[in-house]
Length: 159
Image (cartoon, rainbow, N blue to C red; front, side, top):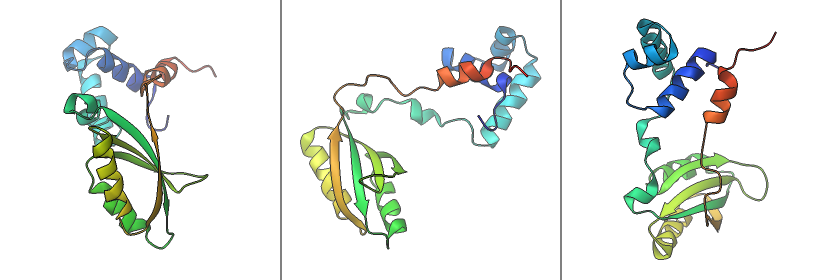
């Protein structure tokens, strides 16, 4: 994990358990100086290694109960217009360039099937999007997580 050491990992795991923990509480829990905790959190934030709090919000709580993954095929001549177009659609939560049958994989949320149809139509009107294939998520089997990696990284390394 580039940029994180075992102390950073321990701090982040403690914040997973208690997101509103104060610097003092983290210091007492982890047996580290308060200034150490403060400087580490500041450094992590400045380097962009801490996710935004809005990433913690569940889309279902906002009324978006349908989750879909869209594989998009694009024309190779318009990558920036595709990216810009996708960024303008609030229901597009993330997009990854991929290998395989398509060029991009987008995680999209919708209120219901009719709303997903509207979003799909909007995506298909973006200059450079040639085709879309949609897969609906039925049940989240393993939720998005970082704790197992942080736990492994928080252990002292054998040399």
